[in-house]
Length: 282
Image 1 (cartoon, rainbow, N blue to C red):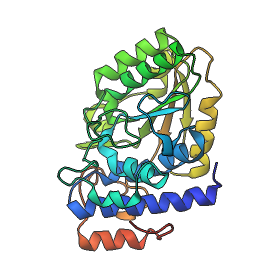
Image 2 (image 1 turned 180 degrees about the vertical axis):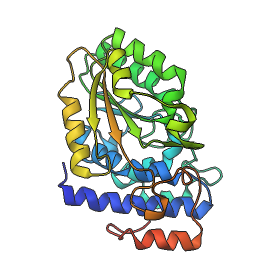
Image 3 (image 1 turned 135 degrees about the horizontal axis):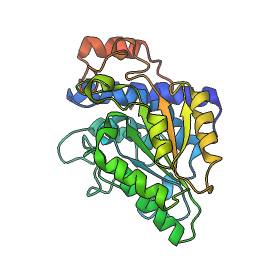
Image 4 (image 1 turned 135 degrees about the vertical axis):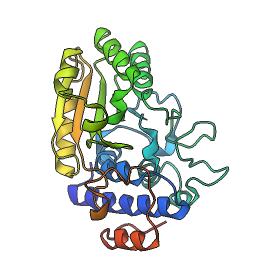
């Protein structure tokens, strides 16, 4: 794994990518993307065993990741590009007609790194469980990872999948919840409260890990490392990770309003002023 300082620099550059991509087309989802940056940077640059230069859809012999909350595609695309799945220059095609980087990830254009089309919330856990069961059938001990929004947990399919995973002892699967407390219409607590999320997953038969500082790189890495210690012990694992929507850009934090809003020219300049260019812009 890269050292913490290197990962932090990469996170800053990815955040620059996010705000620039969304600004360029006046469309996209910067809030959740910024909040999940540290997690995805850590996952793809040391935690997960994967092969960016030799991408295959089946992923035999490597860990697999499934993005369920597909609207945070800006951070997903940036992280994939920055670790070598496709050229960083391609980020400038984000959300443009007939390009591979659509607003929600798709598979028909064969973008390396993307194994499922996601955007309709609630489906990613089911797909991840299916991939995990396929790994078991093939005697492949690789780990399956997925990421979900907290508002996404209001979808019933999530809980059907959660029951299934526990009942079938899908124990080489780590689902991470981006627990930022906000969704498109407001605070999750006000839209539809999730109650005691830890107790819910435990009641469904899952092993729960809690990451209290999801925007601190050391904390993120420690949370994932702890989750991995439960692999092979008979239960699916969920990492409840507390983040801040808009993390890294002060005026985007503390509100749900940047869930799906693009910064204007002045706001972009302000955001970039808070995010040092560390690896070179695309």
